[in-house]
Every structure is written in C-alpha cells, then in structure tokens.
Length: 156
Length: 180
Image (cartoon, rainbow over all chains, first blue to last red; front, top):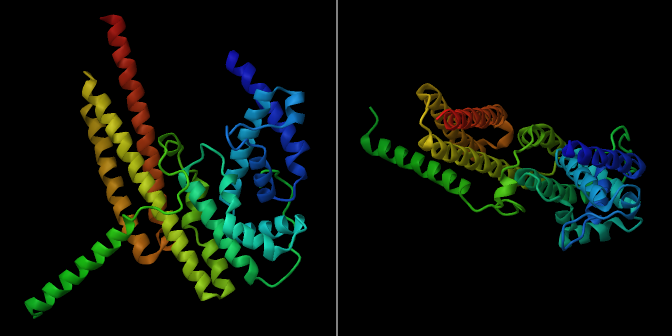
C-alpha cells in the first residue's frame, strides 16, 4: 500500500512535467540538456521549484530523475541523421554562432554530463560516440534550415 | 601437394591474424563513461540500443555523405561501442553463472537436467560472444547484426532462466526450513 502511495504522485509529477515543460522544448536533445541542468553537480539530486511547489521536493526529484532516464534512453537510440538534425535545431535555438558552439562542444564535451546516473554503460557509450560523430558531420553539411521533428512524443 | 613450409606459414599467418583481432578486442575501453560500476552494469542494455549499434541505417547515412575520413571515424567508433557491448554481455553472463554456481553449491535439491541445460546455454553464449568479437574486428558491426541478435536473445533467456531457478531453489529451501 505504501508503495502505491509513493509511486502515484511521482507518476503525476512526471506527467505534469512532461506536458507543461518538456513538450515545449524543441527536440529530444534540448530536453536532455535541460533535464541535466536540473541536477545538482555535487549531489546528483534534481531540483525544480515549480514542480516541488505542486508536489514535494522528493516527488519532484524522483519525477525528474525518471524523465531524465527516459529522455536519455530515447536520444541514445536515435538514428545518426536525426541526432544531427536535432543538434542543428538545438544550436540554432541558442542564438549563438554554430562554429563557436561546435568548438565548445568538441573541447568541453558538455554532453557527458547530460548522461543520467544508473543508465546502461553501453547506452552511455553509444550516446557519446554518436554525439562525437554528429559534431564531425554537422560542419560538413550544406547550410539549410532543419525541419523540426514531430512533437508527437515529448520524449524524442 | 602443398609443401609443408607453405602450410606452416599459412597456419602461422592465420594465427597471427586471429591473435591481432583478439588483442584488439582486449584493449581497455576508452570513452566508456560508466563502465566499471557494478550497480550500473546490472542495468541491462535496452534492445533498441543493441539494434542501433548493429543496424545498417547509420552506415547508409554516413555512406551517402561520401566523405571517406568520416566513414573511417564512424567504423572505428561503432566497432568500439559494439565491442564494449559484447564485453559487457560476456561479463554479465559470467557473473550470472558464478552467482548461480554459488547458490547451487549450497542447495540440497538440485535438478541435474536444468543445471546441465543452463551450462550448455552458458557455453554456447560464451562461444557466440567470442565469435562476435572476432567478427566485429574483421567485418564490422553492421554485418554481424544477426549474430548480435542471437547473443542478445540468448543472454536474456539465460538471465531469465537463472532468476527462475534461483527463485525455485530459494522457495524449496524455505519450504524445507518450514517443514523441518
């Protein structure tokens, strides 16, 4: 009984966050980076004041953790062409020069901290490898306006 | 009639190739961010990740770009991830069998046929993992998709069989405690 009482609010918080916040972001990669930014670097705990106010800090933290893992799993399994396209959309949404962003991503590798804790090691390795490849592909592509991926699922 | 020296040279060359491929599969993994944590290794690899590693879609996309240096980078990266998966799978089934052997040693109520079946599955899986490692090194991950699917299915079954037998053994032991 206790388990049901704890799981249901987490599911509610998860659904709430998915539709109020994540669905508004442009693509899976943007959602992944956003979710990783909700996590404290030192403790690994997630914080979102709005969600914590509606539920509780613990429930909000659990919901964000689940969302982070789900979004990561979807992004890690993306075909390379879609990841390149999402990276293009994400970079354009930042309003910075693409060349600067590419350079920073190659040198600082910020995508490494986008990986949630407790994910499969091979999935993490594939994600890192695919991001490296996408960073190599992107400057070689002809400049074009990328088509926005479908907003059907906020997880992709 | 092939002279003996030619045969010996051919055999030595073959051994050298096999050794080089084997050695390349044993290199420490660079870029595995969470590879050594036991808790994380217990999280099984999702099927869609295995399909993405060994699928042909990404290779077709890279080929269409027609950039040889990018193709080489892709092959290197994908081989590395594929090998990491095979290593993790082989390690995982080895751990399962070790745990199973420990439980079986303490059990007074062993089903020999079940144990034998599990051990045969384990041996065939280890052989398939070794073949997969060699094949990835020789022909790349895209061409060994079917073998990777075979290893994935068999390792999932072995893991499932282990948990079922473990549960059965534990419940039999508990019954024995209650009755005795």
